[in-house]
Amino acid sequence: MINGLKRAAALGAVTVALAAGAVVGTVGTASAAPRDHHRPSAAPHHCVKVAGHWARQWHPAYRDRHHHWHPGHWTRVWVPAHKECRR
Image (cartoon, rainbow, N blue to C red; front, side, top):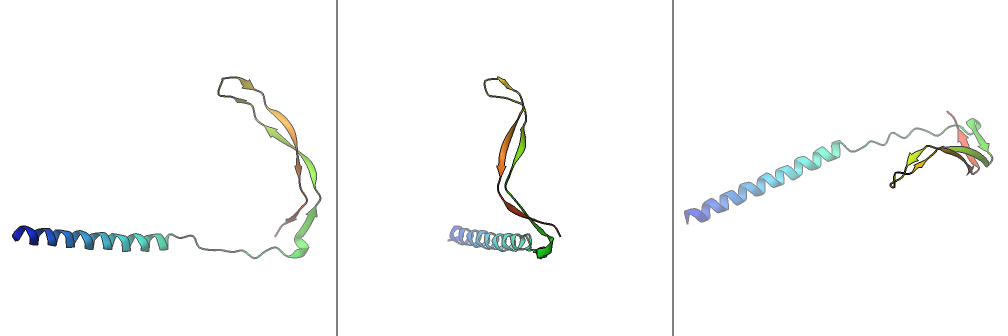
């Protein structure tokens, strides 16, 4: 009977410790959550519509998994039309 009481007391202590750890973990996670610092958008007169155009993009040199050397090179990539806004 003494062993049963000891086992019940130990099980209760473990349950309380786990519950307290879960509460502390939840509070710590909630306080570390990112805050939404939304900045207002730029005024419409600060925006410029940029037409689609070709741009040059550099691909650096690399060595592949077979130890073959590939030199760097330029390629042309299409940049679609978009709106650029500055504040």
